[in-house]
Length: 404
Image 1 (cartoon, rainbow, N blue to C red):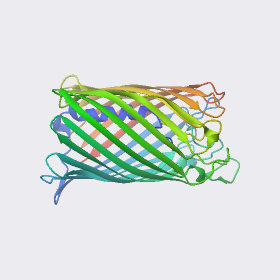
Image 2: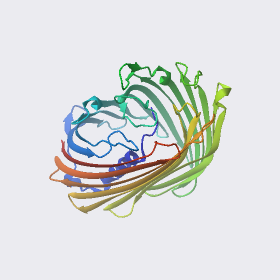
Image 3: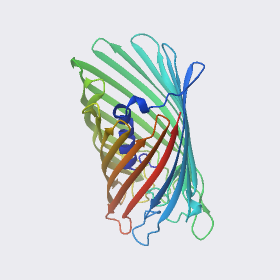
Image 4: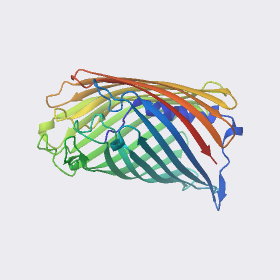
């Protein structure tokens, strides 16, 4: 599973997160009280058109896709602690390529435990049944259908604040199980070599050296333990990833924050055939409420991603995203976003490099607090020095949403 499958989705998520600030409260759902919880059910149905369904460089195929996205969110009304549970789904029905029909869903339960006035604990468990489309970097080139997988995960973070000092420590684990995939021409291909356990730990120390401005240092460690040998290289891809960063965070208002950190990252493989991958790491986040009507969000990072490329050990990824959300009227919200990523396939014999450019424009019209309609246009283009690996895609979508 590719850890981040596209900058566009992140841009959209950031902009939607900012929509709560840009959207009038008169058009936000009330939810239903159920005991000590408020429950927010929703349903979105949409019709989507793409001019490159399989993300091909040549011989592209278009397709029309009907989508159904049910969801339910439950938030506790406790005076002290908080529990948040959600269940979301995404069913896709292709008019031309029915083999690509999918149903993805995610169940998540998390929250906040106020252990003391100074100590908060944030636990979360989740289960995801997901899919990767044909044309994705890590999907078999001969795949006759999307790749499907299941991810079971759990994590917890503790945050302790004492005066000007904030201490954070967290740990989590996720197990990914990939299903066999049908191959063009008949038969199935096993993806057991992608099954893996990932364990993450992190620690952070921040000091508020002036009002609303912190300096921090952060360290992370991740372990990847694969179940089986990668048949294309005859070795397991087990590895350890370490990173250390330092930076500054500024929060001038409750809804505006800018954080930037930089440091070093290294990935060491258990098998020397993969060597090691290293470089500088960057992570920056921007959430800026320019006015009561306009929110700008952004991300920039440099990280290591896992890969199934037989000629590479892993990928060093630069990515940047910028989104804006504006309330044109009380019930009309506009959004736009751009994204860029550069992927260097490191280690072994690879010299592959991919650049991906993305853009999005969106408009939502809220009929009332329960119903809305929307339209979205998305563009993506990948340029690669590996012959036949580039593509461009235009995608348009119209949606109707019911929220209660």
